[in-house]
Image 1: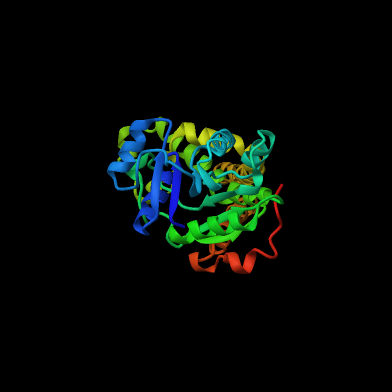
Image 2: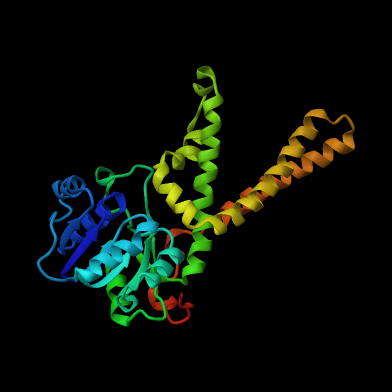
Length: 302
């Protein structure tokens, strides 16, 4: 890959551009807000301009509900030979791109699994995706060259490309990213009711669990709304567990009989043990399958 264009110079787009520039790829920066693109240019992420001819690969780094529109626009303008995106939802953008009449042979969905709670180009880092999975979701229409270019993009940025079906990806990120973000936000929202002297006791644990809540509300409304059913399914299970824990805590505070106390204590302990067991299932970063081992067996998306 010798040339690329990044459409959308926020945190993710600018981080991709910085990584590409660091690997010697001529990179163009395009944004609906020219000032944002110029900020990314000042950071060394590339050239804030539209290329004179098609680049090798264009990366559509905009929120999920804008992917199809941006893809259609820039395909009609012949911005690149091949296209990918960086949205954290894959099924909805693919379906909307199909409905918009985009050339799906030259598009493969992509999701670099890296981010920060800060937003905008000034928060970008050229190592944001180092060692992180980079999901590719080819459709039945996607040509092999397009997948290969997107794989090369992931590797240039330090990511580990893997292939998943669109719906499979969306269910996975609902569990591992989207639902946790919303839970973090709900916990942080409870702090609005705290007195200053109470908040003065906050330690690192509270900082850790509410870090995600600092993410931009508009972007996350788009993300959660675009993956609403999968996120709701995860939260339904969480709500059932939470209801049981609340009942156990109320029981511990009011029950007089030893047998009732033991019952409520067991329910609370079970919830905590399940948490320990669940956290232990998070794999080390080096254990995710690579493209070469996953591509042949991976189900193709819509």
